[in-house]
Image: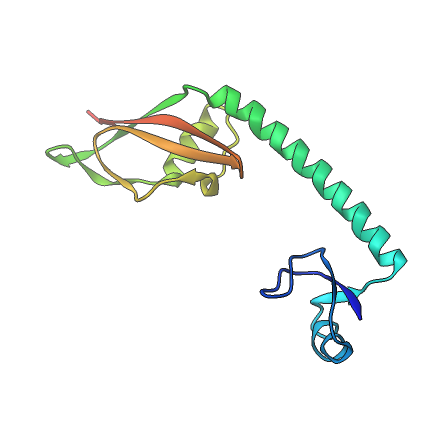
Length: 148
């Protein structure tokens, strides 16, 4: 029986693949759990339309991310924080703080796009990567200065 997978399944294939499986496996497992649909001419054509729409959407998103990356190229922000002793911050600077600082400057960056290994806890200059799209990652400079 030919089916179209709706989700990625190990040892079977990825979402959108047309695969051939035994009738019982399709009827008793894949179809009832919503993991696949029967492959007929209508469903294959619908799958192709969905793929084209998804590819066009991904291309628009990539272009949008690319234009934002050009704006962020060489960008730097400065944050002022209280210092306890020897350059150690009172608290820390997280992705949320960086996202707020970028939004104040008119950049629409979500905190989930900012990749920090761990929160910043010392005064200094750091390079932080912002993942705008799967293939578009841009570094910005974040400078933490003692608040007077």
